[in-house]
Image 1: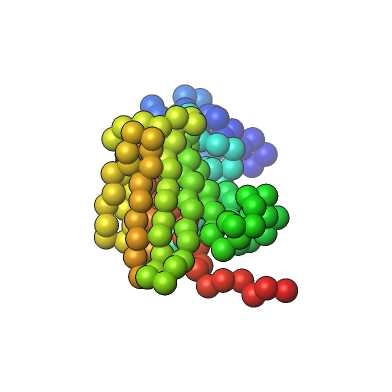
Image 2: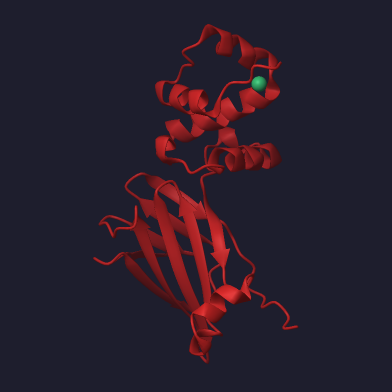
Length: 193
Ligand SMILES: [Zn+2]
């Protein structure tokens, strides 16, 4: 059991739907951990949900962890935009933006080479959201964000705007590579200390 399949081998194998090394194929039969990672990689590659070659470090491991919880690899619906920063969880980050911005929440997600930055602000009428979708740091056409049931295409700058009485329960990112659900967040404000 010592020779686990390398993550790189699993990713490149999933794109070809076959592991190149006979030794690794045999290993899958006896190692549940590698088998699970292989199943997830196959499901993701088959669904074209992400470009696995661009998966950031830790992305596949995270997908495997999700798969373990809910057995999602079979459904291939597990593509998740990982939450990478949240100004509510990290007040120092919000502070950098200046006082006037203190009540707004800033969130960042990433999946493959895509990033979503969201600024959410609550007012008298509800919540106003401004999001920007970037691919390798650039705005691209053909992307959309879905807030609950409302689908909003991004403009030339990659920006989508949405308002609602409450923050969205679910946000989906549609790109040329498929649909990714952004990791959910709680919208109850943390208590001030
Ligand atoms: Zn193994």
